[in-house]
Amino acid sequence: MIFRIFLSLLLLLPLACCSDYHEKLLLRPLPGNALLASFNFRSNATANSFDEQNFRYFPRSFGQILQHAHTKELHLRFSVGRWDAETWGARPWNGAREGGTGVELWAWVEAKSDEEANSRWLTLTNALSGLFCASLNFIDSTRTIRPMKTFEPEGLHPKSMLPNLQLLHGVLPHEVVCTENLTPFVKLLPCKGKAGISSLLDGHKLFDASWQVMSIDVRPICHGDDESNCILEIEQTVDMVLDRERSKRPRDNPIPRPLPMDQIECDVSKPYHAEDSCYPLEKSSEPAWDLAEIFGRHIKGDCPITGDDSMTVCVNTQPERIINVFTNPEDQDFGMKKIPEENLTCFEPPSNGTDFSLSFPEQNMTTPLPLASPRIHAFRSITGYGQERGGIQAIIQNPSSTEPLDVIYLESLPWYMKPYLHTLRSQLSPPSTIQPIKETYYRPALDRRRGTHLELKLHIPPGSSLTLTYDIEKAILRYTEYPPDANRGFDVAPAAIRVLPGPNDAVDEDTRRRGIYVRTTSLLLPLPTPDFSMPYNVIILTSTVMALGFGGIFNILVRRFVAADEVPENKLPLALTALVARFRGRIRQVITKAMGNREKTE
Image (tube, rainbow, N blue to C red; front, side, top):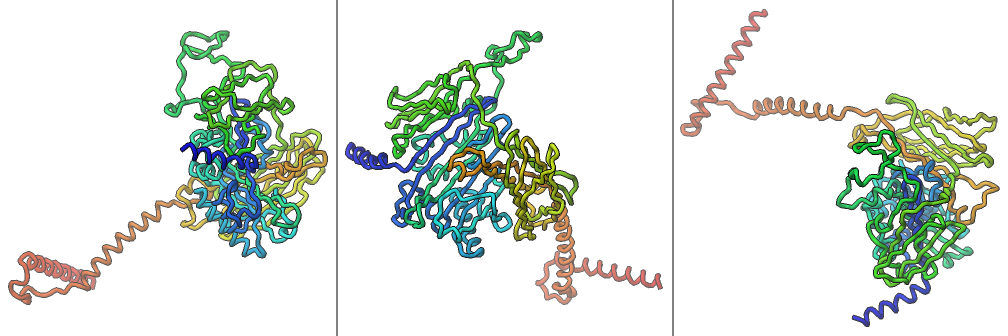
């Protein structure tokens, strides 16, 4: 047994010294007792790893799908909730790792024709649907577009491959993200949630967050024109905003209950303070919280294949913030590093697999933690009333008072939501003589074949707000095309906005490749919906009438009526003889009555 453990440690030594896997957790307290937790996992694989069946760092299941679908670069997003930019500041990763509500997927597929690209795109969506237990197979031609300027490749592709790369984009705003998507996501990691920061990922905590995004990005990094010199990089990211007070509730007490009076700190300076009335006292100090209490578990040591020179857990807080380190058993085998210019305090969990956690006691802060201001604000809503026509209004604000903004605005609308392009209007506030719409790309929808694709290049002056409006027409669907919850409405995908870098923007090359993105909220479109109870009423009534009519005619045509004396003896039961006689008498009465009515009319 000891020999096996020693042999396994020897096998892990070359992985640790030549690691191509890195993971990092960034914790950042936000206003309103919120906490941003950003998990980042990144690993590399050489181009010949697939041919050599070497899936040490790159997941085999995911790599085989990309190889079979000829996908060179892929970006997948699972998103729930809404980022409150006015309270929380700028988005993590500048919105580059954020997607619209539901599931969003875009990829560069190698193909020589549009038909071949569509076929490989269909293969990719169906394979990813089975891998992540999601409804990605519903991304058909009606939900697929080919963006022109909104998305750029993050990877470095060989120049000989660029002419055959085709970008396809699809989104499912109605998809519900749940634990079934988290489990395969964690299984793609090398440590699979057993060690490292991935051991904190719990579905009960993740999906209790106010906002959360799970993203997967695969991109090549090639040097030169030779594909054998390429490195394939996969980056998995989980960003969530947790409510620290709500996360502290134990799992057996999920319903918040008010505290007893003796446990509430009251503001006694209020004139209405009494024994039976209490106004809670607002604390100026930073509340206490614990990493294990927030996530419900400790960090299970360090992932064995992580590089030794990396600090795994970083906290973005004030330099004077007291941070207590917890290890079980008490162990000092952890690293610590402070970066004052970035307000970061980083830690490296013990490499011997012991539990690791951080505790933050209650403390008065002299300096608030600065929040980065967002580059852009965007809002979108449906206008108008009625079941036939309506409109869309999008408001894009430039909060900078000195720098103008150039953005790309992308709309992907379903085919039953038909915009009128000639009604597109733009208005700047405050008014200006500048024409904000610089370029327009529009591809109209075809019923039940493809949706509407609209891309606009916009210019927004400093400190201005741009309002875009256009009219839409709502189509009437066939009754088989309505979902079971048709009266709820139909989800419309969020609009994607890309902020183009300006001449004075000081951004690094990695941020420039990723881009700065903002997604608006999804829309709920009401369509003319029939009363689905009427078809069932008609079916029941029609079936009843047909059964009665058909049954009577069938009995008359099939039955053979004979006289009682024609029936052989001991062949006809007494009860049946009486029934036939009664039936014959009834027929005579009907015929006699009908003949009498006819004589009277004549």
